Image 1: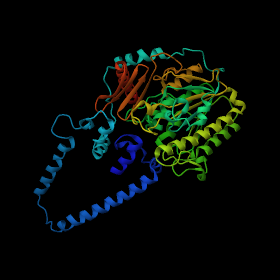
Image 2: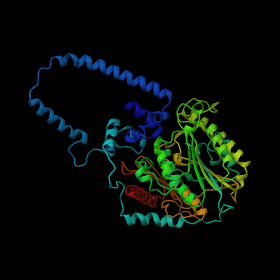
Image 3: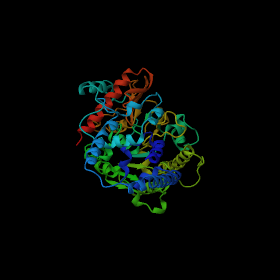
Image 4: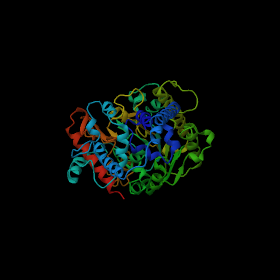
Length: 518
């Protein structure tokens, strides 16, 4: 358990809990985030620890056990008494409230607080907890929470400028780029040499410079993008088909407008229950890793991005039915960063492998856009490039909860744009995408209750994101990041009183919505 804890913390930023059990039905994909070095040394450590324990046990207890005589019935009573008394150390004493994670939080540095948690206790503590109909994030009455959110959101629902589309019903291609952080995008003041193609293309379309992910994993990002739905701090709705089937779905709304819908992914759609979610979304055509030859797979996730996007481009050439809404989710830039060809920044350390993998995917996406520009359908097409979530790499700075981790790129390209070569610095996030796109297409947005208009340039714009047992709210007024374990702010910058209540109200309302979905 210690070995798993050490391996997961670097990638997820939380001590081991029941989350990893969500992946246990796909063990080969569960191991995909683990490097070969971690796997080899972790296994060796497990074997070594087991060997030492067996020797220790045999030496101390084997001979002792031979001396044990037939027992007495009174031993049953004593055994039961001591077993029952274990409830005292398990709950941390005789006090009214049992011990929990907040008892060991002592620092304003979250890494130090996480280090203070006993990993075995933390795992079994989360195992025993079950989702019930109580809202642990409830602070306000339902009416008060609605008023807090609506007061700000209602002013952000309308576009405050002319439409950026030159056609009423453009084709839409959505490319979701795995794990791309703004920290390595030169056009977003990140590292200048990692994404040269995205930097070049940023001058040809509309670049959103203040765009944020709402979660930190793909199975949080997809519902945020396609359902306009906030991820929960500790639960993933994508894994619950009984709840996802009632979510608002952008593909369904696009179908009502006459669009042909499709989803492309080079890996296993069973991972994270993505397949069930996409089927509930009413997507008409789904292409996954089973459509690709195994020789074109890396050893972990699925087809290499260059093979995958060539297939995507090929199908676009064959299928001329318009309008279409096509979604492509890349995967090569996921840990452990297995790519084709040269590692541009080397393989020395996770940060350089991360950079190299994104340099590779950047080249692949650049080639796809160059292909698209030559097609007849391009003049009537909107292409959106967006990350599914941010990342702590490279060079972590408040890696697990800070705004830098959640800052991601979004770029709009294509002949359907009436305005090009501009930057939009309005603060927005993934949950705003579906609402905005449908609004631009003059479609019904009423089901997307959390989204707002990305092109609304009010100073009241904000981005909300959640992480394990906490949330962050970022606006022009300041930044407020809150931890539900210690029940204290982690970071406060600027004027944060309104952001405090806004973040808590959003968490409360989104979790209540989650509870009530059947």
